[in-house]
Image (tube, rainbow, N blue to C red; front, top):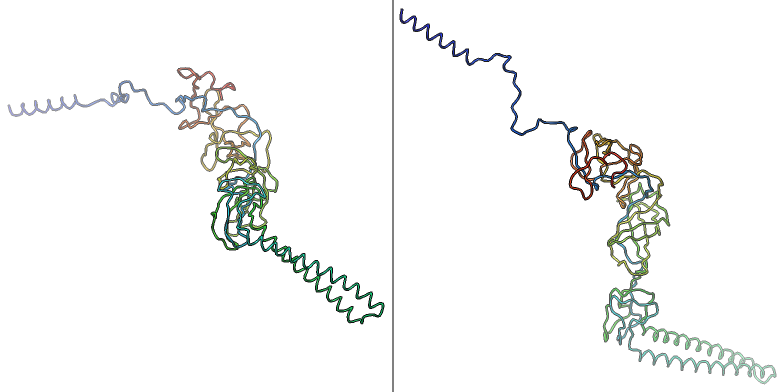
Length: 393
């Protein structure tokens, strides 16, 4: 009996403990715990984006250039190798590298003693030949008079005529030798064929040079020329005389399309375009790398935005984020002409002049985000100007 009562008491205690540990399903509905001071999560539309005035811009309508980009090396329009026209010893050199010379200026000279002696001898030979010719002509005239009088036979007339012909031939030979000697004497003075700059000098005083030896390299850099390869699909819009705007060494220059190749390179499928840039003051140096744009046409009253404002969307779409009523809105746009030189691109649809757009790299953007614009010189953000045309540019 006592054993039965002990077992019943133990069972009742166990049932009481189980009831205390169980919970009613209605009591299980409790809010999830949050950390102290932690705000409940919010969606992207509830975030506030703080922007600097430099992060936004106002859409404007202006002109934009439709062009073809070109790059290459600006080279002198002409490079001339000045060579020796005779064999001899160099007696003097009058110029050095980097020196500008005008056409006809003396560059160097050869020892001219032998050439001058040859020229004087040729002058004497010509004088002698002229005297012989005069004598032969007088002899012919006298013989013809005597023949008319019957004093001499006809063979004497013929001999006198042959004498005149021989004297004329000797005179012609003497004049030829004189011209040759004069040219040789002239070639002892090496002169600049054109105005330009001495790029290289290969001779020194006292050297003995053979005929044809290179002495100088003279370059004309008053006009520089660039040969650029343009893709076949863009070459059709390029014409001779079109302006080309260049940037080289941080400076801007304007050139012209001088020539366009008539054939397409079979390997690169490109057309060579030759552009000339005036360089009369010598600001640009030959060998300078330059980037430029051949201006094919100019589009007036185009809606343009900075290239940095355009963002790629899904499935190849493009969009621009604009600010409307202090909130971010998405505008799907279509693009037109791109001007990398000016850093702008044409918008053919999706925006209107006066729209305020986000141009800076401000991180992730989403539709509905609130916008505050920092006031220049202020401490904090101000939202009052975020949705109107008075937003600072």
